Amino acid sequence: MIWSLIKVLLFVAAIAGLTHGAGVLMDTGGGIRIAALGVEFTLGPLQAAVAVLLLMASLWLLLKIIGFLVAVLRFLNGDETAISRYLDRNRERKGYQALSDGLMALASGEGRVALARAAKADKLLDRPELTTLLIAQAAEMTGDTKRATEAYKLLLEDNKSRFVGVRGLMRQKMAEGDTATALKLAEKAFALKPKHSEIQEILLGLQTEQGDWKGARVTLGAKLKSGALPRDVFRRRDAVLALQEARGVFDEDASIEAREAAIEANRLSPDLIPAAAMAARSYIAKDDARNATKVLKKAWSVQPHPDLAAAFAEIVPDETTAERLKRFRLITAINPDHIETRLLLAELNLTAEEFPAARRALGDLATSHPNARTLAIMAAVERGEGADDVVVRGWLARALTAPRGPQWCCDKCQAIHAQWVPVCENCAGFDTLSWREPADAAGPSATGTELLPLIIGTPAQQPVITDETAPDEAEIISEEASEKPPER
Image (cartoon, rainbow, N blue to C red; front, side, top):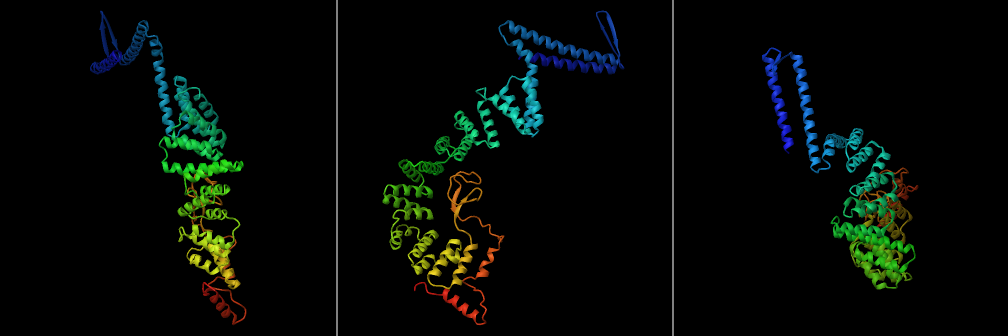
């Protein structure tokens, strides 16, 4: 502190002396006369300027010598690093300046400049955790992956920078598409910092992508403990993982474990349709029709779905159509106005050849909510009630070009899947599939199939017959078919 004060005072004195000398030089008309110890010197303007520069250099050298002497005195007093600190002070100053310039260049997007400054700072400073990291990031920015990899590997040698090195290598492997190695590195990073939210998310994504459902459940539990995940979301996603774990057990033909895992998945999230269907089949395998019915009824009350109806049919596979229609009232009485319930009733009545009842169950869905399923059911009803072939073909033609209805759609990328999967096959989103109608992307088809209703005929307009009186007769036939009473 005292030494710093002395340097400041000397600097101020030098500035004051230079100012006074400049004033004297101007007053004397360009010359300076110096008298000391009986000797007189007269300096011209050029000689005076040179003398000032020599004086400043001498003053700088004097300060350096004084600083070194102070360091020697401290060394003699027991400070073993005093001399080395003095010699390295200027080197550190230049090193930190290069490090600062490198960080600014990195933030500005100047990768090559940042790499050059980082290399200079690495030579001047003994701080590899800083300079090596800057080299790695600058090398990544310039596309030099080999040098970046070498830098990240150097960071692994120090405990303080090991996590940064593992994370950097992990991100490199992910960019290269080497997910197997990236998963191992993510597991190491998770072991070093289990509460790191980014590592938790990356590890969970890699585990689900690789099918490590048990490990994914552990990671999900860590996210819950760290407060990065709400409890209700945790329960839902844990049920998804438990469901996939159960499917893996099914694949290994370990039925007892599979049953318990499926039932556990359904317990965690009763509204998860695939879990409910699997849990019901697990109970069916144990001849427990009561619990299977209970599971499916609860899931149907949340969201009716064809998979639930298929599982409910498996409870009594050898029943007659009339018996099945009667037994299905246990779930069709739940959510009776839901579209899926009405379609299920219509299909059950079609199977039992109760065509008027099927028409009543279908109601106006064929016109108010037309899709491939409702229009196909309507065509079957018309066929069962003896309608003309042209009417049936009209409904089928409309079904051919109509939307397909609810499907498993990804809420993230809108991709459509034939079956439910925990990870979207298009965007790799976890638990993003929902049962709904996809966004309408209808447009003219390449084959012109949207013209089929005009070619084949529709319930409202039939094709023209060749005979002059035939058009009226065909129109009468179609009107009679469409106005036929719902019950025969």
